[in-house]
Image (cartoon, rainbow, N blue to C red; front, side):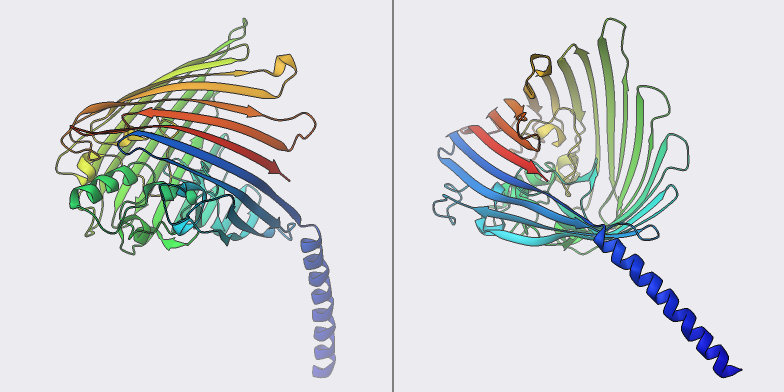
Length: 452
């Protein structure tokens, strides 16, 4: 009897294994390859103090493989790369713009995504290296390669018209844009503090040791403040049950650093005439939690509102914001965003002073879609102004007004629909000002994205 049972059990196992193998083979055979090829060229001509021109040209992007689903389970991985060409002395940051390349202006290639995903009914769980786009922690894909994360994310839509999110983020891999805020390991205390204030309120860490660690997955706390922590726990709810209305509430508990609450409401409606107004409001509240040796006190509130209207192919809006100040708080009470999140209505293409302590900012912008003329073209312009308080932290003790204007042109050729050509320009004035100096520049970017 035991032998008979053993043979039966063996036969059953072989059948099950054969079935599983067939399913697993199908899982991989049904996999898909996708990606983006990107060419990025940038040139920035500084005026005032300092005065020089730096530029860069790069090729790269990412290639991604995702398996098919087997009983709800799937896998994915993506490699990211940036390769510079026609560059001068890579060690001279006054010649080569660092925001398109890896650390120390080097070429770079790395495994940016490697995850497991499981779907059951209305619930999805994703674990591993992945791309995140949330208000206070995001990919910030503004230059060559985006920020990436190591995270465990649970999403559920069982509640009607509501998306619930629970996540724990353990590591952060800075994209190439982080090089813009790279803090030198030497220099005066005032210069380093100023650079930290700019970085921490612009979506990046301000306590690096002279290396932005592009593509390197660092502990969330290590990247933000130089000390390993328990990561960042996230809970969120997004509601879209009322036509035209979107409400979202996020809570980020960065262990031993801060707790950040992000709330936003957007509402839009339309008239029979085709005029479609919309309004929005956002609030960010931050308070320190636990203890650390770098940012002892975090206490800030950021509020913003915008109003706009869509008429025919035009989209025009205006926004205002205000950030609190506190001379005893970190970066004088500025809103801290160490992991790439930048949701502010009033941010410029590069100027992100709206999160600095005491800043009052406003922005106007407009775009036009040329589709009615048979062209896949969208053009936009904007102007932003930042009234800086003396406690701003970037030029501490000095109040001034920084401005930025710019344009954005996006064209999709009819003959190559997977190709997007983009030409952008930004022109900050008094980006930084002291009693005797000021910093201006004219910057142009050309980006070609081919998605496959």
